[in-house]
Length: 163
Image (cartoon, rainbow, N blue to C red; front, side, top):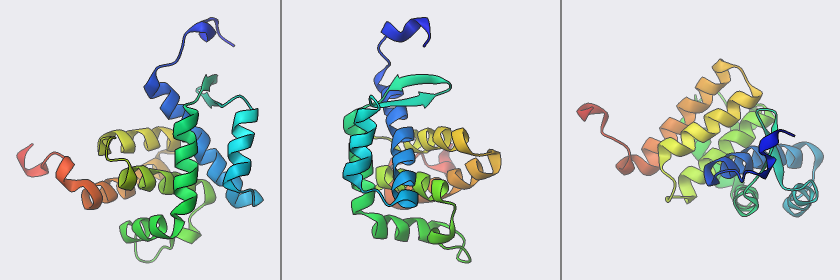
């Protein structure tokens, strides 16, 4: 580990680590059949960290748990939201597993966490997406989350006609 291990990561950094770990946990649940309790326990046993740019960062465990539990309890609703924002020729269930986990987590935050500004949610999940994918997929996630932000929380976004 680097010399700054004694430095406590900022709240934003801990939340970013939680988002990344939550996406990894949602992926694990889908491919392995583990349930939320198992992935949350595994996260805690591993020390509650996530690898951000090659550095193990202590994640916000409470936020991680909220995302994992919230997404797993709302998959049909989240998939319907995502489905309404993607091309009608594509189905949410046909998306790659990691991409689906990213979109579900982003849709969860966009729909359930009105204390987090939509541009922050979008930016954070673009960062998570970039950890796994090339720019094309990052652009896809950006488009979906942007559409969801306009539908779910358009009153919080700057008016494009005025800017």
